[in-house]
Length: 270
Image 1 (cartoon, rainbow, N blue to C red):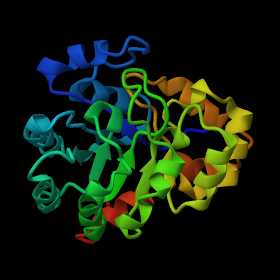
Image 2 (cartoon, rainbow, N blue to C red):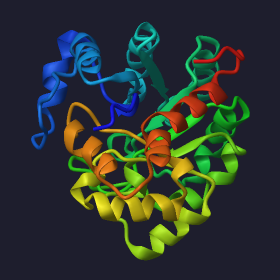
Image 3 (tube, helix red, strand yellow):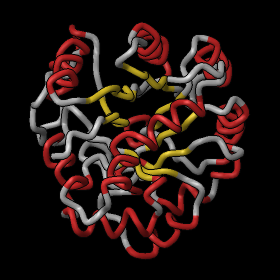
C-alpha cells in the first residue's frame, strides 16, 4: 500500500442497541466491525480512513423519523450521514426539506428493503424535490441477498434520472454486482457516479481497473459496505489495479471530497 488517505462512501452504522441484530441479519459478512459508531470510528483511525459516509435506511414509513434522528445525531468530523425517505410516507417531501435544513445532504434508497419500484412515476415529485435542493442520491443497484424484488439496474435509473435535475446520483455496487454488458453500456452513458461496494465479489483488480477507466475514473467512489463488505479486499482491489497513483487517489479520496464539497450548500469545505 502507498498509504492513500481514504473516504469510505458506503458504510452502515446503527444505534448500539440495534447494531448486533442488524449486522446478524445478513449471514454473509466479514464482521470486521460490529456496526456501532464507536467501533467504526476506531476502525477508521487504525486503517487511515478519514471519513465514512453513513447510509441510513427507513424500511417503512413509520421508521423514518427514528432513522433520520440517528442520522442527524451522527454528524461529526469523521461521519457524513445520509438520511432516508420512504416514498410511501405522507410527509416524504417535507422530510427531504427538513433533512436539508438540518444539514443532511444526501438520501439513500434501497428499493428491495423499502418495497417500492424506483421507476414508479408516483415518485417523480420526491426525486424532483431532492434534485432541486442539490442533494446527493445513492440507490442500491443489482441483486440483494435479502430482497429479490424491486431490483434497480441502470435501465431503471435511466427512466427517472432526469427528475434529479443534474444533482449528484450514485449507483451503488458499480451499477449492480451481476451487471451484464447492455446494462454496463447504459451505465457509461448516464450522468451518474458509482461506488466499489461489494464489487470484489464479481471482479479482481485487473478487471476493476479496466471498468473504472471505461466509466471514467472521476466517477468512481471507494466504498466497502461495512460491516458486511470486506474492507481489505476492496482496498487491495483498487490498490493492485493497473490504475496510476493519481487515478487511485481520486477513487480513494479525491472524487469523494469533491462530491462532498459540492453538496455542502453552505459553501464551507468539508
